Amino acid sequence: MNRIDPASTFKPAWPEHDQQHMARDFLLWRHLRVVRARTMRHVRSIFSAGQAAPVTTTYGVKMWPNWGDKTYAYCHYGTYGTYLADLLGAVEHPFCFVDIGANQGLFSLIAGQNAACQKIIALEPVGPTYDRLAANLTANGLDDRSQPLNFGLSDKAGDFPITLSKGHSGLATLGEHGAHLAGEHSQASVRLETMDALAQHLPDDLPIFVKIDVEGHEETVIRELLGSSHAKRIIAIFYEHDDRWTDKNAVNALLDNAGFEHSKIYGRGKHYDVLATPQVT
Image: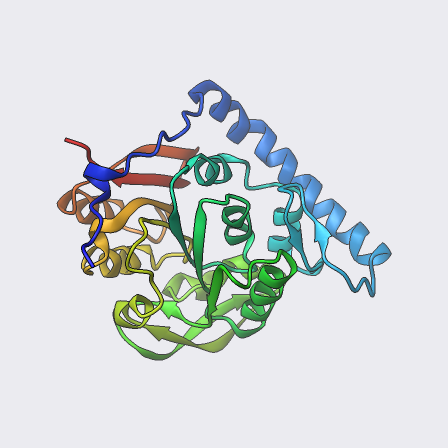
């Protein structure tokens, strides 16, 4: 089967986000959403004790309650904003969503709201978090369109240590900076696989939208993706960046060499998200 070249055949009309609106959002409203989520998770943990059913989040997807975890509270109360959700909702042609560092699956679930998303591949290496990911996919009726995978993507395969932050599953990191995380943290062992293992689960006939949130391992993940035979089918890479533990110049060079633009920035300061898309000539 011939590979699809999205740069010439697949051109989604990505939504434009007003720069002034984003500035206000990241300077004020996002902080207020964080405060709300952190406050309400303590309230909900008291009054929702023993709740045995998924609940609907601000994003309109169902997730099993996990009020002891800040990451879940952020998902529930919409702390992450609508930027990636808007991008996922704008794709009108059949595509595959690859969620690398899926955590409990928020953005996989949001992708599943779009009927054009015919396949969801969600990677989460931390066992208990992976279990919640799989349960949330089931709760949203996505079992027939999704494949949760209990490993992380890297340039080496094997079992490796990961640092876990108590009460904040989204801070799990393979990076050395994990030893300096604020608050209580611990170490666990997770499975990592190379692109060869991930490729076995990718459909051959769909363009690919990739989301990457791996707390400092972004450069390695992007190198694996762009060095694979599937790179030409990638229509977007939405990744988290932090100047404190990721080399921006190295990541930009990888994208440049692969023919990707990386000019759409969501956030301010040292920590932000980037949308990279193939250059159209």
